[in-house]
Length: 77
Image (tube, rainbow, N blue to C red; front, side, top):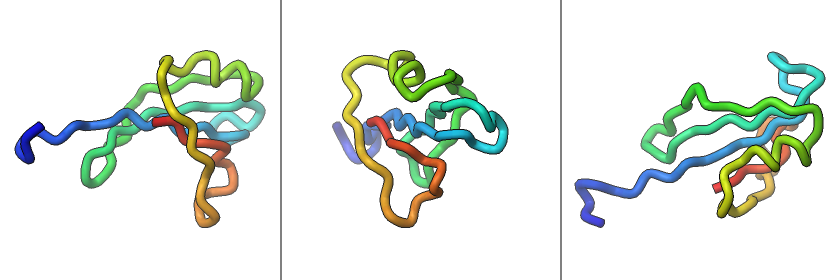
């Protein structure tokens, strides 16, 4: 790919009990642009396993960093 058309990755961040869904697990999609682009795409489920099952296949899981919001469970790219 040329520098004019860099590849944009989908990033799915999984949250445990965020403020807008305090009893659920939520996966929200963003894009790896600079700055990152938040989308309106999201999945809501009762459990971590259920929300993981809704994510697109072929993603790789990363654990949150020490300074990430404590409600972040994992990040999928």
